[in-house]
Length: 337
Ligand code: PHE
Image 1 (tube, helix red, strand yellow):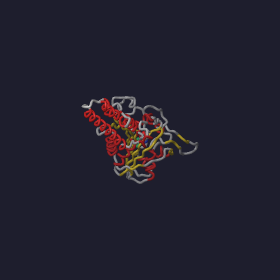
Image 2 (image 1 turned 90 degrees about the vertical axis):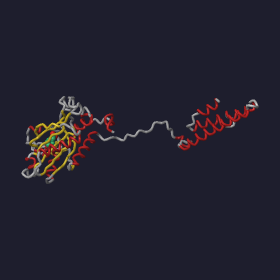
Image 3 (image 1 turned 180 degrees about the vertical axis):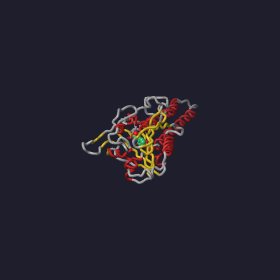
């Protein structure tokens, strides 16, 4: 009975276990054959019953062995594949992931493309002429200090500066100089500012500029466009705040805040306890800018906006510090796979 139990409970999954089983029970010198040899010592009247039990044990053991062998062969782990050690840990593949800023930029492009905007890009190393002058920043005007500029070349006697663009608005300049209205473009890209680094500001960040010039474009069109964008980007019941503001290249101008989703409007370090986070500047394109770029302000009007992509990513993914977006720490990037 104990041998019967043993044949029942014997683990038969690996080729090695099968071999041990065979040698222990099934071969001529094995346990079962041994029992058969002992039959002769059993009392005559008990012998047929004992013999029957032994035969039953033998065929049970053979059957288990055969079944296990078939199982092994069909699952492919026959002796040939013993070279593969299935207990070794697998090789991890690191597929990489899209950076949160690129994800948000991608969504922005999708939303504005659906509204009919096409995408334009421009150089990060820009002429002062396009970054400032054409955009109605008067020479030596304090407005230039609004955006602390990284100047690359400011040669004595030369008219034009070379600088790292401080906003994506010079791409508008380039588009207006190149194209006839109607114009409907977005211009995504990196911009640079020489300002104090903090949880909400970094020396490099991303903007997405929008420009729409056509006949009879009004501030209402601008507002509707921004609202439609924000509903798709954040949520259907998003709250926006348009605050009057000043930019040399737009009149009237506004800055737009969105509820700080990091603290749900309660106040945190990213929104400086205000409950709002500024995400874009906008306004009606100044007639001087249209004229500077060869467009007749009597015939055409338009709006422009420039939004912070990184700020939007912070809100979207509830990230507390803009610097995390630029440090490329894999522990942070891994979370966006
Ligand atoms: N260029 C402005 C900035 O960087 C944003 C802006 C763009 C404002 C277009 C009005 C119109 O702050």
